[in-house]
Amino acid sequence: MATERIVGPVRPDDASLSHTLELAQRVARDRLRLLKLDLEERASSVVRRSTLISVGALCLLLAWIGLLGAAVLGLAQQIALPLSLLVVALSQLVLGAALILWARRGGQRT
Image (cartoon, rainbow, N blue to C red):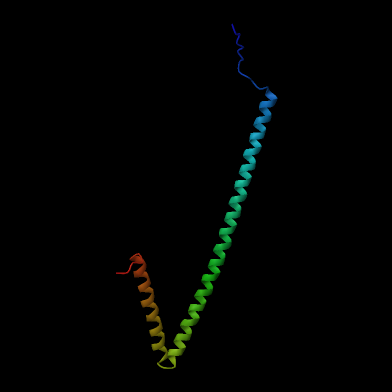
């Protein structure tokens, strides 16, 4: 007849359990630090890209205003200055309205 040895549950001593908990806390803290650094890096990248986009949009706006001024001055040589201003302003009004209507339709051609 074989004798079976029954082993009860193994209980770690307090020092081992304390050390394990300390290591788990360190891992959790390190992960939180890594997450914080990752979020800071992403936020910095978003701010940098947003700034560059804003500066680029401002440059485009200034160039567009310059082109409109040149168009007004070019037309002023052919027609009166107030009329050339009106023509350029109306062209922008029509262009803006067309773009808004096109966008509201979802960009689909009908």
